Length: 459
Image (tube, rainbow, N blue to C red; front, side, top):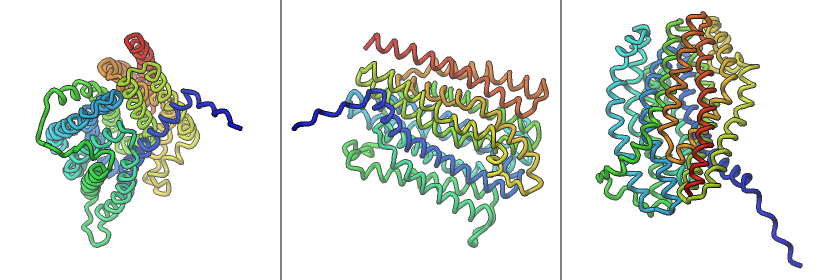
């Protein structure tokens, strides 16, 4: 007797599994990368609130610059995904090669700005000694910028091929190496000199080079990727290819800078409230960032899935992939938002030791800020995933406009009004970010609905 064939799972369920299968290692990779930064912050906290304030201020400044470069390079992801969906395999190597050259071009101005960060931070109202300590840290950190950007290009290549697990494995080794080097160089263990914040910078640059070289070795040795011969004629620059990456990626970069820039401005605002407020902000941002790496992975998976569906001219799959990634992003951060609201002080205590009396003020404020973050975490996850779905369609210009408008037209004025005019301090400043993210979520989901419908009409 022949059994009837089992029914295939519904299309939405298959899409959910595909998104999760791709997003899980990407999210774990981003979480691992955050764990590297968390290790730095925790060990800065062991030095004291002054060190964590200087280190977080410098890192936030660096991240604004780095986010612009990563945003431009992110333009390569939907380009490669659409080439793969359309089976244009010969166009993958030029996209990779020109993205690598673009990374080198972007690293130069970022390095100059990081090298002279102290006078910039002082002009922005920060204390001289805090800015000087942060600059010393950055002057070591920036030597790992170029390999970190090349690592990002390789990550996009693997994500477009739905093969991100190697990135996660390499990043796990990076966590262990970073922790060992931090412990050795920051505190002078195992006979090494005690370098403090500068030791964290040295550790970061070593880890960046290790991760890039390890991932490059994997890609060059993998049987699936050998056919691309990625290192053939590495000197060849194809300006039309690079221009396409810049055209798609530049709005992503402006979007990233608009949102990261707003977070950096909130860091400056918190610095105006004092070192304790700045330390509380750093702790809250670190906790929030760890959780938010999961929606970031889902957004990247959504961009790849939408891009490959768009390359294959499958309008139904485009809509299904985008909405699946967006819904999962909102659902998955619900539990962390509850934890932040009800157990914020315990979460903050994982970074700032509650047994140290000097940490009490910063710890109490961090608990309040985590409570404020709980209100907008879901909206932030949704807007980020919706933006990723739009990137899969190479629709990046309007999301850029939305990001700038919501961050600086809504969020910034609200933060100033609540934080300083009404005197709510840190919680008022974070409430401004809540307004920005909620507005962005509404506009970006509406934009994806419209663009998916337009693609269906043209397909």
